Image (tube, rainbow, N blue to C red; front, side):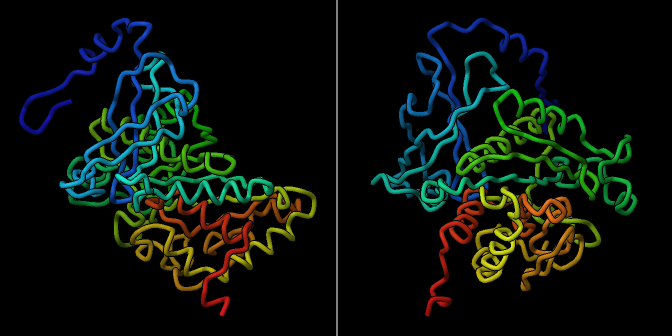
Length: 367
């Protein structure tokens, strides 16, 4: 892979060093966290003396929060708390990826730490067994910011042949998508599928079903894997909800949700009740569902209007969709189609559980 200044890196040379034997008492643990934007990931690696089996076996660490938008330079140390561990598909062996929460100097959660509140909600709703399936859409871009494989300064053929497409002109970036799939499986992500999306160079993968807090942990690590793999191919990943204006589909993170009551016989009644609760808090949910989502939720390109709540059976132009098999079997799950591709899954799963399982209401609705 060549850089812009004429220098280059050779992955074959790198592989020689990655294949060097690793001491038995040395394990590489890559700590991963969400920075002050609430969207971007950061990471750094440390050596630990044995392979951790649980995040509790790893110590807290710290980083320079003034360089990540999370602290001032005069008081810059931010703490990293390990909360979930995964196998490392880059370093292999006993090495681990570590998802972390971020805490300020006084051990209070940072503003970008949405996991803290999410975990509280999941614990409170544990008896209802909330399950999630997250459909992460993303767009591949060249280094110049133009979609991968698109004609420079121009556009490909209109949408139509790309969704689940096969062929050099339809499936743009399949190498990255397939590498990501295998890396997720190796890492321990419960990835359940993947497909080319409606806009060329846009893809989707699904994580789940996951129970409770695991949904957010696994989706964030899956994003890290995607970004790292694309980095090796010299390609950018965009989670922008509307990367190309005009007659092109946007990118979402459709969130499939169910409780035990919804999955049991005649659970359709619990699904209908949940939809009523989601409708009442529509504006509150939209605020948690991702930046610039109004550019995507226009009522066109398989979306609902951001200002109006709607629900329907097999309707991809609705805010919340009931899949047809669920309607036929009278039990299953609902699909919240409002979250944007750049949403924080902790914030999304948190507000859904608080609304549907815990019965939280907005202050104006109480008065």
